[in-house]
Image 1 (cartoon, rainbow, N blue to C red):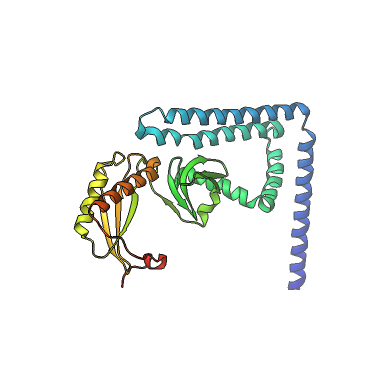
Image 2: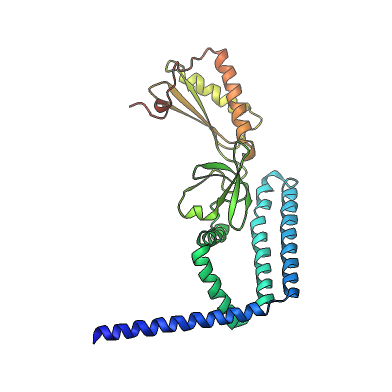
Length: 294
């Protein structure tokens, strides 16, 4: 008796699901039959206009960000993702109203069809879009931030609907979907600020005068034209099997100058090391370099 009741329930549920799917298909077909050449032309015009508007706003904000006060540059750029999202949202609403008239039945029919399609065919794409919308408010990264995401490090130069683009130190552009934030940690060096700490490493022999080296590194940082003198300058020292590692931690005035700044510090420090005849480790093994002394 119990088994018969279960089979009956399954049969009724399957029949109801089949009827609902058939009804949804009929409603979707009715919507499709209402598509005309005029509506398609309007849709193409709307898409073209939104594309041109996004590109124009992109260029305008980038142009404006380079002409305002330096400390406001990133704040101006960070308006761009919100404006893009607004333009895209208005465009989608216009297209839905154009083809669906935003009636309840039409919305239910097409929304159901689209949801099924996205669920099976565009799962990752939909996940990236959702992550991008959430990212606008949680802000794990923003335009102008210097981030490490997975194996990629660089400056966020584009924040799109599906993903971001990083400019790496090698001047390559890497596109990363937003849904990576679900699984990969995001390391952000400046979090919307203009400054980002730069760590410059120096490797010297065990016999060096540590205090002398520290004074040299502090002097090099304080006299660099790129250094933000209002932020702290630190020198960390670590003993390893192969020698002494010195880490100079300081901030450039602009995070975009990170590698120019590091080059300036390294070049000027090495000149002073040579002047004082400071010895370098004779042999540097990569595995030993990453292993602190016991």
